[in-house]
Length: 363
Image (cartoon, rainbow, N blue to C red):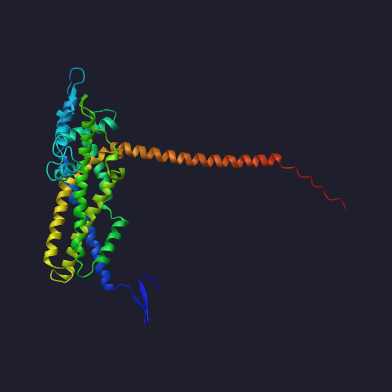
């Protein structure tokens, strides 16, 4: 069997007609355009939401630059701190189930408050930046978000596997395109709930260990708060969610343009409208809540990201690492050459001297 052909009694026939292949190319193009558009919209509106936090950063920087008389560190009563009041003393304090329910609802309103931002910022700085409170956490967070979303714009191989599985399961009467729309919907709600719950866990850790602390309230970032101890797994779920949502919308427009709204492939209106509503809801929620939460909460992992250095420092470090790598390779080659030369010299020393050749007798 040749590539793209199948054998029959009459000979070879193509597995897919030229017309179907043409439609497939159009669908792939539409999918790529919609996915790119959705990613751009998410980063634009989500970034605008994150930039609203900039005035909190400016207020903190202004307070840090003000000269204050040197006094003994004030004692902070943990139960009276605004962060603890909002995350620990409130709804769901003594129940794990209610705590998760609170985190689920929190993503829809006031997902990030000033006390949340200040506490998470301070926890990151005290852990990773040698207590330099003048560190511009907001700028670092935006750089890290830009680096992460360079990966989201791409379409990885496992996403194409999902597309193939969907096309194989798209059987008449199953309404696969309707039921599969709930996958990104559920995933996005789960991600938002988890990110909110990480903040709640940080508050619980401090409140359960201390009644009062000397100085400011500091939380301890840790990978243990995330699924599989991997903050990057959240980015994978957001990537999959955005792609699948784009796939749903792209599939709708492709059917609409290619076959028309009244075609049997389009399906019933009762299945079409919920899909579109879910798609719009996912886009709005991801931009307004999930993406900003991801940008700040994933900084609460054990390790910081490369974006903590500015671009010039990153380029310098990358160049230094490349030079070290080349130097090691060159040193290894020189050592091998030296070893070979030593073997040759030792061989010449221990080689038995050959007997002098006798000249032939004179005739």
